[in-house]
Image 1 (cartoon, one colour):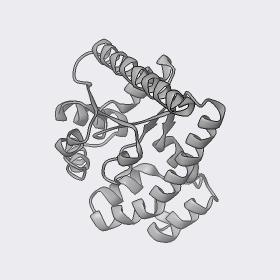
Image 2 (cartoon, helix red, strand yellow):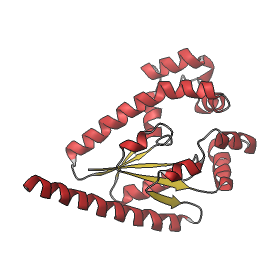
Image 3 (spheres, one colour):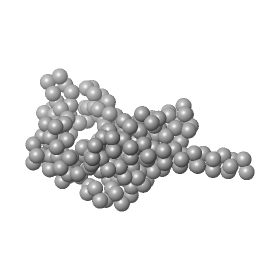
Image 4 (spheres, one colour):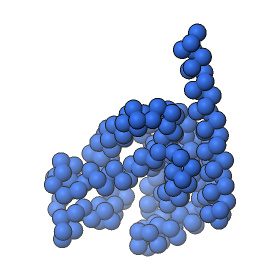
Length: 213
């Protein structure tokens, strides 16, 4: 099994890349999707978030209002650290369980872990390879405005709260520049997938020869 980390700046296009890798045959574990599942109403994580951040982070239907919570933590590093302390160990535990289940079902699987904080939390060190997706700051701001409904000022605050992209690029094994058209991103992502397949195959053959010697 080959475990590949997929990360990048906010609104850089990680989801588009993970969809392409999934089409090619990779198993995708999406940290953001896991986070959504963990904070469903009346779960332990939901209760802890309300205890720490207050009932004002709830919608009328009892679900966590993600934009309200994001606005609260992005402008306050202390609050952001609190949120990460609550969420990240639970997300990591669930990711590890999913990797284990995939490995049991398909020992030759390529598993892609799509997570924003792989470098910040040092979890990239547990991956066999790391892909970093990049786009221009202008593109990130436009996508944030469109996707999250935030102002340009709010979008810039979100970007400023993140680790500089240069730091992520220092530890990247592969860089996918999502700065042009989707077809170009698709072409690069497919090339990366083929290279990862080659690495996985070489590793499999090496382990096989070690086992038979």
